[in-house]
Image 1 (cartoon, rainbow, N blue to C red):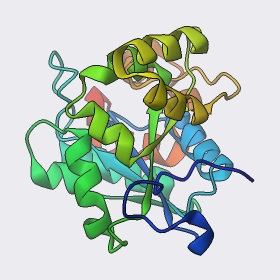
Image 2: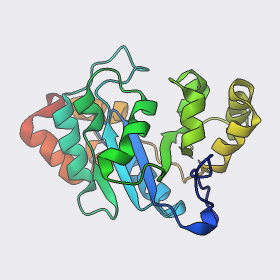
Image 3: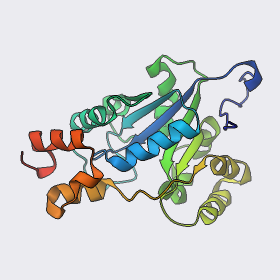
Image 4: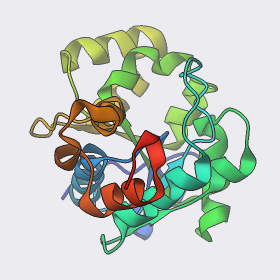
Amino acid sequence: MDVPDPTSHPGAEPRSARRARRIGLFGGSFDPIHAGHLHAARAARDRFELDRVVFVPAWRSPYKPGRTPAPGADRLRLVEIAIAGERGFEALDLELARGGPSFTIDTVRELPRALGEPADCAIYLVLGSDNLPGLAGWREARALLERVQPIVVHRDGDPEALIDGLEADLGPELARKVERGYLRLAPFVASSTDARAALAGAGGAETVIPAAVLAEIRERGLYGTRA
């Protein structure tokens, strides 16, 4: 299977010399983690032959200033429950321990050391297609995209238009790199907003939240629920 190799940067050995470890970085609020997150992570792992998929809950997203997420320790624990038994999946408290706004470029730079991986390990950044319109405004966006291979999970909108917009902001080379990582999945309608609404009484929590996660939420009375 021909998959992008983000280690092809100055100073990296040719891919033919060795097969770099492939680390998937899946960041987000995970407030709470839901079935759509797992669906995307499994597809990314399998399509891009990732050795590890690391879920990194954000302390606070700099791009969602209007909402305060649930306590980080609770969100991390729910992630750990959700991914238990999943091949190659693990959770890391890197951004929670760092505190402050969680900028992806900082996490990418710290990740190899935190995981005990080589500094030039291949990092695949898992993100939703809804992030593409604002991606050029992320901190050090160009340096970020030069270091990682994005895996873009399609959610909605026209993929070609999204890539064209990115090309206008960041140029054709980086836009093509993003395009190579575009992952078209069967629709899976779920979001943390939907999950919180279901927990608040809208119903249907069982369809968007893994059973073990839902049991923990209800047992502990998280998100306003009661056992």
